Length: 250
Image (tube, rainbow, N blue to C red):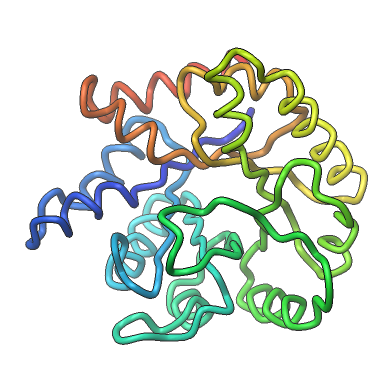
């Protein structure tokens, strides 16, 4: 069965908009895990607009206690800044089960593209080796239809994460078949190269079943924005339960 990792970044966005400690990121993560989620995802950024390093440390302890996975996303090339020590230093302190490397920048509201593996990938290979030395599984964020996918395997990655934003946009218009075929094709290519396949970005209750039925053997989906938005209306535990029903059925 595909595993569900809940991204709790949006809880931190709400907390940071007011200051103080509410809503509590750790409490939200516990609620998700109590409802059956298989793991927690965070994407700390140097500007600390949402998840902060202290959140990552606390979530690392929580997930260790619960025996579930913590997935830490981020750009390994982004330098340390203020209280943000850099992705490698943060993961060295936390030792998450999985690190998902994403080529985002400060100016992006959210991640909107994956690695293209064009040009010299020597530095990326070096980062991957350092994360794997921490016993972290390494996943690379990629676009559906990416060329030179064999580079991901050659660089030492364990998995890819399919960027599903374009699929979600197409699904909302009722024209998702081409995008879904691209996702399925990239998944099959990755699997043939020995890479596991994760997926994430803009997946929701409205499109998740179609995505999983059309994309073979997805190991994990990371869902945050839609899930937290839906939970405003229906409650966090109820919403996590509905996502779990979808992945079981699909």
